[in-house]
Image (tube, one colour):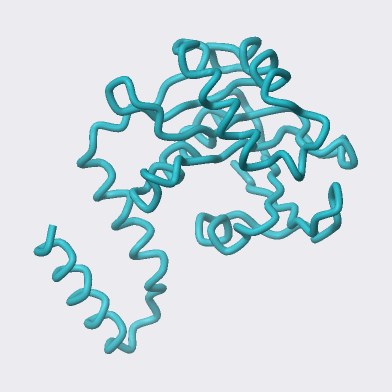
Length: 193
């Protein structure tokens, strides 16, 4: 582990001193994905692992209850229980390692009742705090993008109250900023073609 940190710091220092037009943040994004590929994280449909529905609903409720006040943990369990185990919308992908749930990302038809004109959406991107900064969210997002492409979706939307920079580094573009359920959010899009 110390050797990896030394290599990262050495490479970062080298890139900072170079005059090439290389975005360091993109390098480290790809490097974190490479490091994560060395882990055993498996990405599958939530519908194939109903034993994780309750935990995921609890995580999502804790994270987003303020921005989705109409949803309770029980309503989330009911909603997620109906998600497909195939390349259709709505669906939820989860990252697991053995029997341990690590995170999630979903594709849904609508994620903002005030913007039903925009569809479909990347939603519920969440990685448990114990497993963050390992590229798991990026892998989940990329799986969702690949799946959306495979079912001929041309554009995806998302909204985020605080992760605009994270998504921008991954190619998402700002559509607009607005207030949603009392919170300032950014609506972003990603063109898939």
